[in-house]
Image 1 (spheres, rainbow, N blue to C red):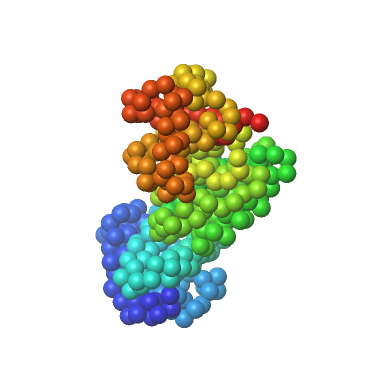
Image 2: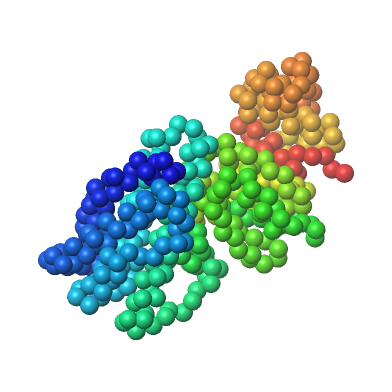
Length: 400
């Protein structure tokens, strides 16, 4: 990370000039375009901030050890006194600048680093560094604004209130939300809904276990009653599919965790959460839900098929006939048949998936066909739907 920052540091002036131009174009309320002094203040502040960010990265200086440069304070005074602006205009400029410097920094790092694990670690560490620098700068400027211009302090909002605002449809300032949560809402998110399956289910411990497997992702979590927690993990870049696969395989004792798909920004934060809740809901349709992580992709079709569980259960029983038996033999045959249909009706792939001999697969399929009383290829779509419904509602296990 320091090496990349050293290499990029000589270009800080060029980068700052580009970002200044974009900020001035996007935020006309910050300073008047006709004010040479105001435009110069924006450029000076941006140049000093970009230089400070790259310098602290290059020389290993903690982001918590810095204050806004003099140019930022000059811009604050000009924006308020000469342009009639508000502190919110300056904070918006900082958040936009944050986005722009991150785009350039992350693109440069990706060009320089080929090792995927190293790249992920550098992006995670530098994302937190830049976020902390911007967040502390905004807090410092707000304090200075209140001291100098008498700005009143808005009522503090709890993290729970901010999370619920993000999940609703109304407008939300993502930068301010990120500051309250200490979590970058503009990153790439994966949401989870965790709940105990029994009295001894330890959700906070399960959440800690999952956090360790994220590879350094930022996290925010919120208890929502009855032992249930909502949680989000955030990465500066889209999480690697292998990382998500590792999360999905984490063993959780006594805790069920629904997991949404990755999403970016406020929209991804919300969508991934809704998917995590759907995964939790569908997993709980089973007569005996088991602990562990349930991904939305794994239950998406089942969720549609089981919208009305009683109708779905009747449909499955009718289509499966004698294969609907609740004994261990029928459960094994249903599992084999569902894997077979999901594998494109390939006995070889089914044997590999189940770790059995292909002759065992053929024998089980013949047994299943006999219990069904019709060829397996006669109504593949309905048969597959019936098997998926059965696995969802009965967890694919025989009755005790």
